Length: 294
Image (cartoon, rainbow, N blue to C red; front, top):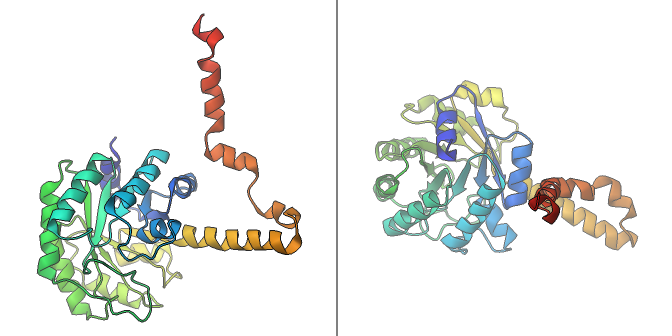
């Protein structure tokens, strides 16, 4: 089954879909191992790996290459965070062709201006394009795709930008009517109140995705009761890896050896397992000269 078909079928199922944010192939593989349904190729994460701000600095090809690595390392669908579509409708058309051809299951684009700024940056005024302009991007994306199961998710940033709930609902409706397969409603509130209000007022034309970065107390059963279809844990793996690397490397400098942290970090064998070293050994045996001549 194509990965795009896999995610489309999950959207028609009864359970809440859990997506793990990944920033490289390794984090994607660990997410799959832990039981997540799909991978979110995080724009913040991919930018952070390159140590540049999440502000449309990396090129589309750089984001695509990272998503391809995640896709090749896993057996579950990858949804790519594609910021504001890397430009205008022509960039969106090019983007959809490239991502679909690469086997990525879907893309998510947001209704901010290009270049965008990360939604959680403080002290910066988030600027949105008009609902009509962004709806044109959605239409262009849907008209371009060849695979009918390829997902185009419209991310509504009204609540991030301080606009009204009515604006968020209007935009979401416009994007659904333009052909979006799902709406990602984003909020930086410390509680889930905004998301709950939006979900109650939402018409249900297409499924809802949420990203509970700033309201982490919300549980899967609450998400299900709200009628939300998918939850994206977009940056937890990135933040965990940075925290642990900072602690371990700092401790080595402080202690003068790695002895204290050895019991707190993965064994080398665990890394070998993630690298499929056992499969390499099986292949070596299978294709050894002696076996080949039998």
